[in-house]
Length: 134
Ligand code: NI
Image (cartoon, protein in one colour):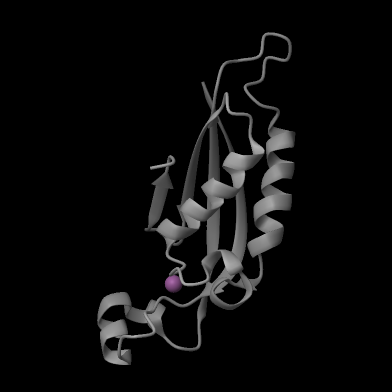
């Protein structure tokens, strides 16, 4: 059984490689490489898989999951510049893929090992990624 908590945050980023020219960065990363950063309204879907607890009827109490996501992820990234403010992305391009991986690694440490974890990050209405630990 899988359950999901959805949360959102807003953050700025820039996708680029320092050693590449502006032209090459623009060719590879498009508008996301503009030097002065830009923002996205990110949508997270945190999926937790496990057995239903016969005592509570829950896989995991979604209020507990919500509190973990808010304190460990949203407080950390909301209204931040991912490149400049967030050491998690030092030397790592804050692509949707890498955001999903970073969020998964943060949450994996917070959840009991009996749960499977999947992190979906939506960057735009049309683009989203899913990370399951690989
Ligand atoms: Ni972007």
